[in-house]
Image (cartoon, rainbow, N blue to C red; front, side):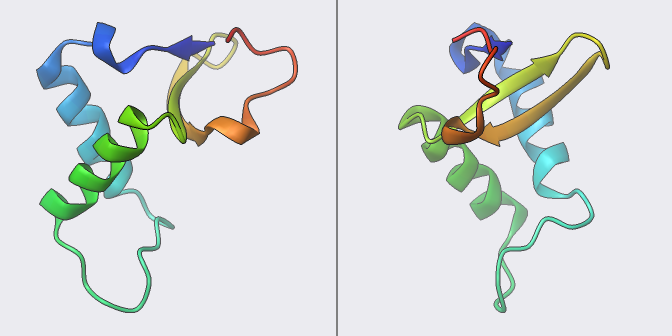
Length: 76
């Protein structure tokens, strides 16, 4: 299920973006990118709708996914 980012408390959204940006396996290429820049990039992607916040009820987990990867049975 998609969670509109504008409906999330700003502090909670910031925490979500920071947590996502610092996860193991999150690769930003060969150059070092600051956490601030990573979060800003994620915010831009949320704004232009290339990335969405996805809640998986069965697992009770939240993730960021590419909009093109929304499951076929997803709540759009």
